[in-house]
Length: 298
Image (cartoon, rainbow, N blue to C red; front, side, top):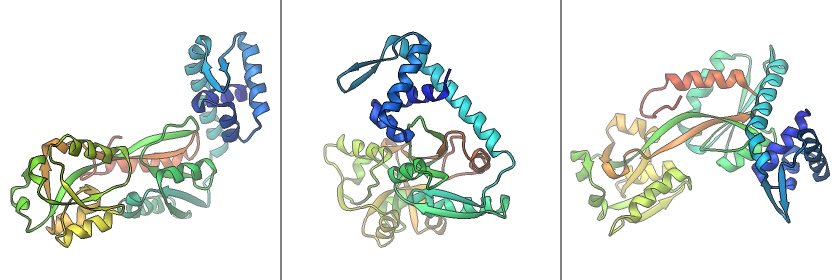
């Protein structure tokens, strides 16, 4: 059985389109069609129903899909082991979101440098969507992002950073260290908005209130949000990693709110399937060894 036929089958199912699969695989649409026709001859059944532009798996295709995914994963891992054995690149290109770049990356880069002293490192900071495209185009080797589901990409949970309410040290809530969501209705709220699903959970909590909090400042930069709180302009929900130094110095105080407990920013480490196994293993070892304030998934 031709592995390229199986690859085309898995990608078409994921993207729901022959054309999109062809773009990702860097081949023509007729070539993708030919590969599926060849696979169907080998299996002696149809794997897709084509209704105009809509593509659906047949019952037989649905039965074959998990086996095809497993075959493709095993092949890619084996190929990587053969090609990468004993080969360490001169440069490792890492992508990360802004928060990871600011608060985690200095430690991670130093860890990698100690383990691989002869390697140079290049860091690219961008949005999750941009980093995924750069990874697929092989402009970077690894990336730390929020979340991705893509058959071409392997993803490893790296850390979970709890989001809590922080106030300046002389704020009335600082003495209590505990509040209900209703108590912040009259407060001036600074809101950091990064567009991720994790932050949407806060919006849902606000929407459930009879009187939502007064969001006076809505910003897209963690440092800006933090400095507004330090300047006593308001209070803000922030991830713990971004305020480590200020909490230790006593200039920012965490206030626990039961209604928002469990909301956190989740960061994953990603790479193309079967690639950079040694670097991934090294970084995940560091993740296992990390301690609070972020909560680890590995």
